[in-house]
Length: 153
Image (cartoon, rainbow, N blue to C red; front, side):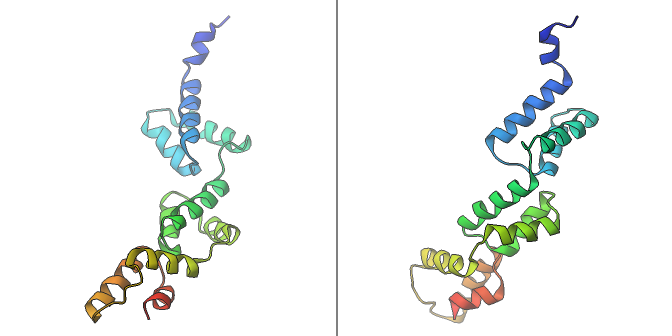
């Protein structure tokens, strides 16, 4: 007969508690959570089984993570190029990135206009150097040349 304290201190229970704590803070991709749990020295076999269990139970979803990530980063003024790159770095597949971009239904034209207006307060650029500086800023934020031209010209 096992003591209930032993089961709470088992490697599986500790890994599960760690995973649920991370998921309670924010959504994670399965790749992110996998890496986070391994970094906390949980055994890989336990982490793999736990990730599968969390996905089956709906507590971990790459689709939900990607959709919320699109909304969060775009609301902070980042463009589609940068957000796609960040999602790839977090282990989300290209197909899922493209699918969730469609379902997120974001209008990056209006987003860049709002962001540009907030940043520059409607002040026109004075010279080509300042124009280039603004273009580079928006490009680093992840906006395409077409979207940048929309607000700069």
